[in-house]
Amino acid sequence: MSFQIPRGTQDILPGEVEKWQLIEEKAKELCRKYNYHEIRTPIFEHTDLFQRGVGDTTDIVQKEMYTFKDRGDRSLTLRPEGTASVVRSFVQNKLFGDPQQPTKLYYIGPMFRYERPQKGRTRQFVQFGIEALGSNDPAIDAEVMALAMELYQELGLKHLKLIVNSLGDTESRIAHREALVSHFRPVIGELCEDCQNRIDANPLRILDCKKDRSHPKMASAPSILEYLNDSSRGYFEQVKAYLDELNVPYEVDATLVRGLDYYNHTAFEIMSEAPGFGAITTLSGGGRYNGLVEDIGGPETPGIGFAMSLERFLVALEAEQIDLPIQKGIDCYLVTLGEGPKKRSMSILNDLRRAGLTADRDYLERKMKAQFKAADRLNTKYVLVLGEDELAKDVINVKDMNTGEQVEMPINEATEYLLKGIEGGTRS
Image (cartoon, rainbow, N blue to C red; front, top):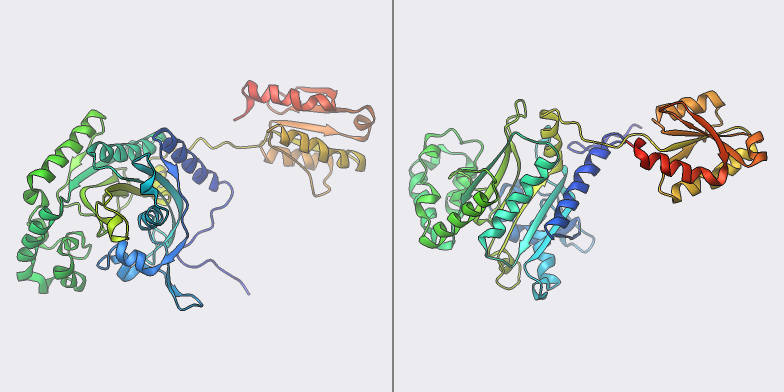
């Protein structure tokens, strides 16, 4: 019987997984600079967390969640996004009581959504995100966007566009909601079933509809920017001013609403404008979610964050033909001849690895020539040769594979010799 992985999932193999690791390492390094700390939450949560936190009217909750009953007949769901879980943990563990505020967190991990698989969009995907909880300062909105842009730029992406919008506070959204209902009600029968359901539940989501995006009423729909009250308008102006101060270019797009119910005030997306990237250009997105903490049972706490798909990140790098600086090859490979050298090679390997070097040896009983070929395939910096004669004299031959130079030295001096050579610049 032949087994295949489920549709919408992927195996990330050696040679490719190093790219993922590099992005993850860069993300963690950047978060340390911005004073964000890692949080790890369960891969599955109680279903009602996402129903309440993400929103009953969203496509995620209505169509895309992997939900199941456990043996105790409890409804559980594989997490489709990271924010709800982070906020749940923030409330449950009373992180709001920490005197150091705001609470600045980041996460990296798999998420799950049942949707049509395509390039850069899978049913199990890896998401990196940050959440800043506890501050109403528009400066932190700008910081969150700047961090996202910086991560893309650090790895070489150039064809980027940041689009921003304000969804306003509760008063502004109520006024805009009424205007949207009045605008779409006369033609609601011409729109898809989802839009017909949303007109009363959440008319703002109509603007995010993929099926009816070309309908004439979409282009003429009332803009949220026309309904911002003075407070919301002032907040948005400050966010833009901070982006200007950070020299982060952006465009205002009044049609940007994001796909989750919990957003208010600042909303943003980062798009790829690389030629050939594809029809779906969004790389990441986020926004402010004041009110979400209270919805999940915590005290009144403002928050803002973003999330990015690593799969989409890699597609963007491919579109811009960027080769990541992945370290290839190993530091040293031991070639042994005879049973005695083979046995001694294990302690030599152990010493090399404990010193921080990448080292390997033959485990297939190959001849000397085949062992050297194996070293070549591994792109080895140095080959160490140990035969019975060398072992008897307690020496080892060390060959620099870049220069071809070969020297014989005491075995106990080889590690220090290799460290000096590799630290001198031969490590790729």
